[in-house]
Length: 497
Image (tube, rainbow, N blue to C red; front, top):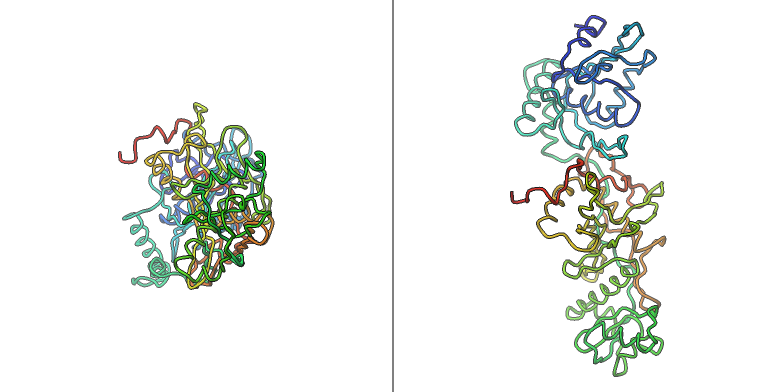
């Protein structure tokens, strides 16, 4: 039956939903409405088609209609839904006018044709914020949706193959012939071979552009760093602001990139005339280059300490701790807009108001020698979980919550966090400067990268420049699953259960 008055009246008054009929009581131009409807469109197209009728109450199925002034062109519907998905979306559209309780009302009806040639698959995350300012996700990137009873759900396993063979049948009927159309074969081949799309493959290796020329060392009786700090503070009447260069204690010697002269407070802790070592010679000597890396990492540790990052020696990682009061945050400009990012995310139970756990921005940072003489700073962003802002969660709870969260931690989120680390370490400079004066280490903020030809077709991040154009919402991955008012992950059954 053609989509017109007769079919419209039948659909409006049917009084029940099904896999191929969905009612919507109202429609606004908000992003959330568009995205939720788009999800149903994708599911219906993959399932073979269906109707979406606006102006009918959910549950009661009472026809109430929309304002008679409502109007959207069919091409606007198509363009909007196509914006977030791959595959061709084919719609028919009719706006049925009638009187409800003597008032002119309108019932827009979308008919979603079954997909032809390829399944409809979201190419981006359908993220929005609802009326209560809670982040929600209508659909997931790369997930194939279908209809099951009255709901739109992900297709998996046998359900995917049912959709595939239905797609083959529809496409065959449309193009003629009984064989498998080339359009449909491309669906399978795309699941087996990469798209030929050139883009940049970024690494988390940042080359050291400049090392100090020399390492200075001298014999010392001190065996612990704390004793050296105490000696210097005692000598300078407890001045805690005394700049002390980073140093390494090894083999009864003190090593430092800064000259051990009278202006260096470390000179108070040595016994003989300092020896000067060539940094380049150390770099080329296997027995010495590990000491060089240790000294570099101590310099990095001191830089992170000035940025208020706590170092966890057991797990070799840095993060900001929280001790009540204002939540630590940073304001920066990751791309065109300025953004404020919380460095600790407090997970509060909405029902009890109790703090369940804290999620901290952090990372594993270290220097390493790669290749003949290449020295690189490695940045691995991490999210650390604590019970109260400082006490780490036990291993089982950590694994349990991280497993739920990390499934939504995608490449763009990883790059975004890496970019935030660069901003923290470099400030507004175009390089990371570690250490003072002659002992300064300079690291590039441009990572090692290469061009590849196996990118993802229609990927929204393809071609984005890492430093200038990376598109990613600052906190989009932090709300990675819906937390109901009663939900408390610390009180769930164990991961083993």
